[in-house]
Amino acid sequence: MRNRNSILGALPKNSVGCEIGVWKGEFAEQLVTVLNPKKLYLVDPWLYMPVYPDRWYGGSSAKGQEDMDKIESDVRFKFRKIEEIEVVKGTFDDLIAQKQGNLNLDWVYVDGNHSYEYVLSDLENGLVHTVNGGVLAGDDFDAPEVRQAVIDFASKYKLECQSVDQTQYAIKVRK
Image 1 (cartoon, helix red, strand yellow):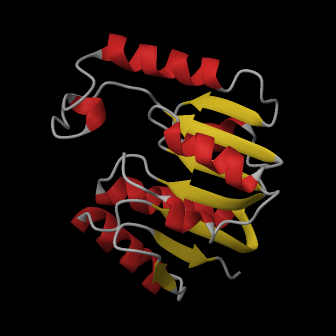
Image 2 (cartoon, one colour; image 1 turned 120 degrees about the vertical axis):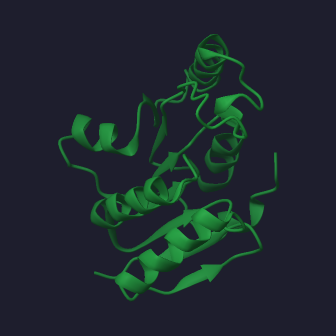
């Protein structure tokens, strides 16, 4: 796992946040330790997708749905005693529907499906459900589709995107 400590300084402490793309929960542990969130939504479909054979969830690590089910189970077990954490099996859209659009997030960390349309959708949803002054952030800014989606999103809404390091980005929400 890559070191994502550099982005933690861009995210507010004692806040309400959402990590999209949890995988095994290693970064979620850092989020909990460093940010001490009031509420943290951990969102991941934990769905095996062989259409993406070069990605962890498509064959490069998980070899089938049984592997994904085990990863989800392990994440749920890891965070079972932290009442501020809500684990959601699904997408950001699913979380929004489950909460009937009543999300007031201070930040969203996007690290789910790295295809352009998924990154763009997560950022668009994040903008709607993140408070003014909040942060949209994410990983894999060095991946071409991620970078392009982030740049296009920031340009569309006239928001400033900061590259925190080569792989992390942060966008301050202005409404």
